[in-house]
Image 1 (cartoon, each protein chain N blue to C red):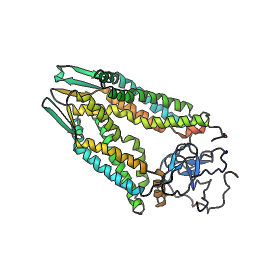
Image 2: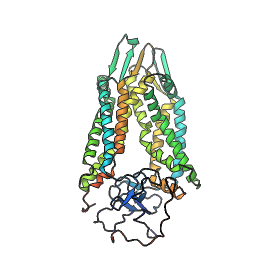
Image 3: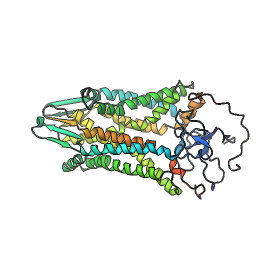
Image 4: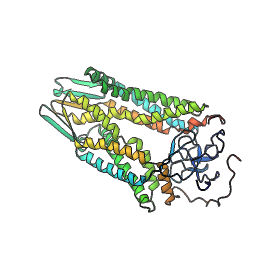
Length: 219
Length: 236
């Protein structure tokens, strides 16, 4: 496909700048007074900073849920009906336990998926929402878009820990010998991941390009 | 291109906006196998592939079969000191049917079983009539839009990695055997990857639109004025 503008040095014409509304889901272009895309039914929203309120709201909800997810135990293990020990492990405790048993690779997976990724995601979304719509060079815009795509791609992988707890507690129901029960942190961690996914989804990537100067060499 | 593509800067006809950065592009018919990228951000705009609809239908059907099998066949089998426990995902759901953690179990089951099946069904609903050259069913656009909205929430591949982690954790406690349902999930990952490679949203939207679903979401527009020669943007 080609740009409607002919000369490469000219600024990129966006649907918004042309007085049109582009559908962020299917790409169809409509007159700007259209409120709903008539092809796919998605709402047509102009790319402005008002949409960031939803991003911040979900972000905060995710952050709030992330605190109990780290404080409370993820699951509790009962061996020999509690005679041989009844251990509760938080996320960090679980990682420490894995290291203790020598399975470093799995420890790294869990550590990355449930500590590094959520933290990085909070920071990245906050940064994107802060700088969105601010002037940027083309290179900066590309960095922001890349960051956004990484956040969007990697967000769902934090669910690993929730699945681990679900599988373990379903699997290890061996009556007297051993049983595992999920703890309250499992629920709040799942909610935290879901909220940050919603936060990332409600970020409008078109804002990244809004602040670009109208004329530049490569854009 | 044999003919100059026509577009209308007043109504947006014949134009496409990049969903990522809003840059305007003139719609052109691509040859099969070509890939169109946004001139500004490089997002793939369209990649029509030969026989893509048939492939997508086959893959969606495959994933329904795999998922139904994954629900009822044993997933993992664990045994230690004579105590055994073979669990299919269906058993797991029943085991938690009463308890405070029911919402969590329901959410997990929805993400690994419910949503993937729902997405496949929605996709079949949209694509089967299109592939046969018939007009799309009612609400085909809504069905396809939902299947795309639900994409990030169907987490079968993450579940497989989660299972691997769980296996290591439980290995010291008991012996674990993998059941057929686990392998069904592994196969599902590859089905999803293949489906991803054939999926071109723009082609599907265009096919839905061309098959006559233009006015599902609103009153019919005033008929567009006959294509008059419009000023090229650089002249404007």
